[in-house]
Length: 224
Image 1 (cartoon, one colour):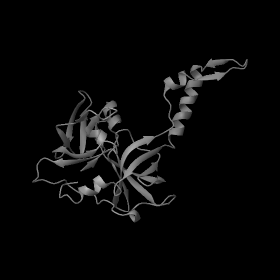
Image 2 (image 1 turned 135 degrees about the horizontal axis):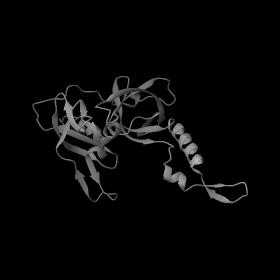
Image 3 (image 1 turned 45 degrees about the vertical axis):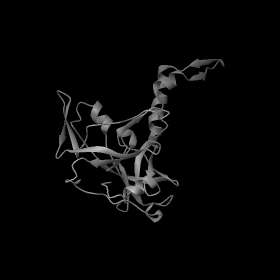
Image 4 (image 1 turned 90 degrees about the horizontal axis):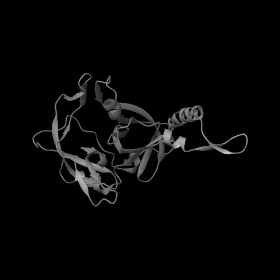
């Protein structure tokens, strides 16, 4: 099973200290009791462990601890350049994303599972591909699907949204020509503009078949 490396492996900035997350489990969805904020898995829960990872590229492979079991289904991986959408294509990709942070923060959201989003193809580069108008925070590790194959793994999102503290440090020019801080109303308007602009964000996925480490998973006889 492929996921984003930063979901399961933590390292220092210089990567001298790397820690793998232990006691990992996977399930199809999670429930939350609104009164107690206790979490429970829905359906069959499987224990997994970190098998291989690349902290620089940001992918990790998880392996079932119980080798006698299998995952419920498998998504075929793209293996050729022809499987990747062309730049400016009108064909859609399909993104599996999950509102993990919203599930953790909102007491009234009592269930969380992957959702499928139809997405326009963004920038197509040699090793990465983007889709427009991103996914929820917590979606890293989800696949980008194109023509029924997984072509990329979601690892990052880029938007123009600013934080309030950034706007508080901004200066503008008054009518008298002097520099001054923004008023509360000006900060509010800029925050609204920033949130609107963020809807033109790009989410980034690493293309799978061009990564030698990921390609090796298909030939080493292990669950990927």
